Length: 289
Image 1 (cartoon, one colour):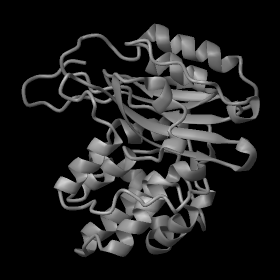
Image 2: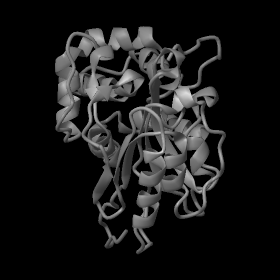
Image 3: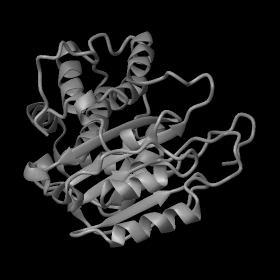
């Protein structure tokens, strides 16, 4: 990706409905990636993975490359069930496979609920109080459904549609409950290609810190495939028996200064902004999806 002094680096973004191998082909394009154990065939039937592949301020090559995208397409076409993906590369170009197909969002939409609630607080001039902070933390880092219900009760469909407009989505839909949300690969790719826009405002660092602090037991798929060379912010979602499995993620290439930057570092940075004092959980709460 090319940038000029003072310019804002582009993000590359992928959204995939396929097995994890296609994500591995894309995320590992530049540095090879680290192998992961593939999910079962049931898990592989419907993956949505949104990956802004990298911020690359000093590199001139495109990530993922055309060859990597074609490799992902070939892999996706071998999988059973519904398979599609979209990628916005580091030059801002979107490519994919069946990327406009609508599917149930599962818990990936919680990343949009996060944006909707933070925008509500900003608009109404309200603080990020301890109760709200606890709900958002549970909803994102543990994917807690009760917390999502509480946040949805505050923002409703209108808040989700507002987040969709902010993310420049074109085919998002929802009616009556966050669990009814419909997303596409291309729309989630657009959102995760520009998280700074989606989470603009005084709580931006807090939001990004949450997306970088998903609990270890849910850091399969894209984070595992990306390896140590990529910093990952993401949200996953799945239905019972893994009939549907989604991931939406931003991948940024680490530089020497970033090595060792992981979820804990994201939390530290959020804490430095005074907005994530209780971002780490005691471990007694458990996510349901």
